[in-house]
Image 1: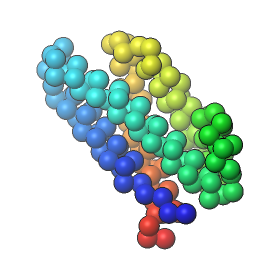
Image 2: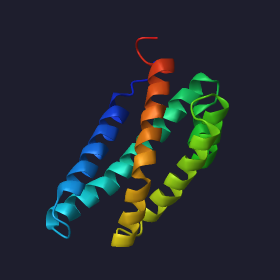
Image 3: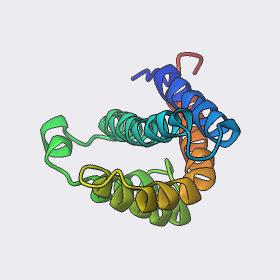
Length: 142
């Protein structure tokens, strides 16, 4: 199966730009708040896109679509590691990203934003690494 990772690449690029613009905005300004909100939504979208791509890749390893649809995200991440899509260290970090993401559904406050911003450098590296592995293993040029 061929998997296009272009949407994930775009999500990561957008997230990186949002982080840059957030840092350049006047502290406490409406622009900074707009970029903070963009970061949170970008963080969520990048995760959801990553999980969808992991599911698609796992189908290539023989896992059924219905079973994968009913599989919790953390288990999908574990399965991804068993097939070399993620390292065990990355899986542990993805667990933290997921836990943080679950909080976003309820809390967009300043403290939450600070916690999310603190984990973004690792998240961007990990999402980029996942995209690269998926592109190499399942991309159109394989």
